[in-house]
Image 1 (cartoon, rainbow over the protein chains, first blue to last red):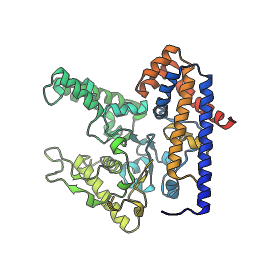
Image 2 (cartoon, helix red, strand yellow; image 1 turned 30 degrees about the horizontal axis):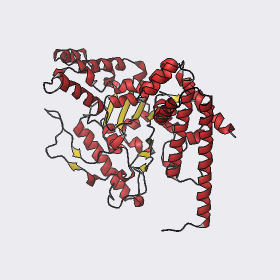
Image 3 (cartoon, helix red, strand yellow; image 1 turned 90 degrees about the horizontal axis):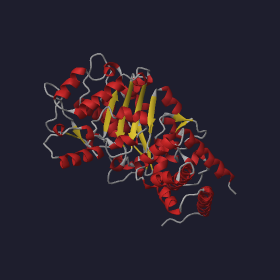
Image 4 (spheres, each protein chain N blue to C red; image 1 turned 30 degrees about the vertical axis):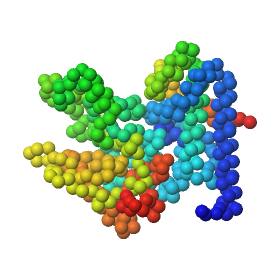
Length: 365
Length: 95
């Protein structure tokens, strides 16, 4: 056990006093409000249990910047590397928006412009790139309900509402009870952890009516409804030339500091993986599915050149792997700029944490 | 100007965190968010009928509560922001 010096002891005592003072004042404010309230004790108890989730939901429901005259303070770990990170003004100048969650905050290093999609936003070739952190373990239908309303409308263009599906849309015949269970299950959880939604260039036209006709003939009302949502969004001038990247960061997908500094040796090529040719390509690599890795993969789906490099899963995975390979190589030379996605949670900072402080059993994380 | 998604009660209330370690700051942030949430919910209940308060307290889903409050309280977003300011004033003036 390490003994504390008298200075450290005194600092700790002072810190405890500060906390006690703040807690007492805040509780006093609530007590006064309670006294002037006429509601019954039983209901007060219920409201109190809802207070924290209510605050999270309410703060998250604001679609845009609001005028609160106080800055967002950052942790000491983040302060230490502030020079490397893009501040609010720089993000705005680069046409980049980030929708955070109550428990996870994403910051970006300047080196994020090595990714084409971020570079195109900063050069004004996109009106905006919005990175949306989703407070759930997957990008399910229900997870979207936690997003601000304007973002929710974009999110829902990429998903079939399970409750709008017909029995035929499922891969097997289901009786009504099974169908209900399947719908509820899909609404709660799917395997998707990230997605990119584009309203730029050729993607701005939305789906073709031929496609909708085809889906209608196949009795796929859920997919038809999704395509209709996509058409409405595609025609919305506010969304023109915008790109959205959604990443699940809730539940078991919450970033942890020991996921920092992914290395290429954590990935394996999937046997039999293949690029798109006559048939649709496959995913290429298997490895840690961290929020940072998902962001890399989704960013690599983006392309913006007249030759139309494919944005298949295979190529996005290839781009993701190459970016990690490059980042790791640079890190060995003392340059950590290849890891531009920095997540801050209650557990600490992910991606940029000092490697000496990491779990020694997982040195490559 | 800030995005409310990033709302930090510690910054909002201008609390000096020098000397506090990271874990304590996070716990304090959670505590303050809870107290501000309680404050706003208690205040909002004053705008509702007994029946509406009862209905809201029976809701399990905060999104539904938020939806109901938006339906009942005119310009709820503005109301929410003004209550944040009220909490701050009360906090700074409490003796």
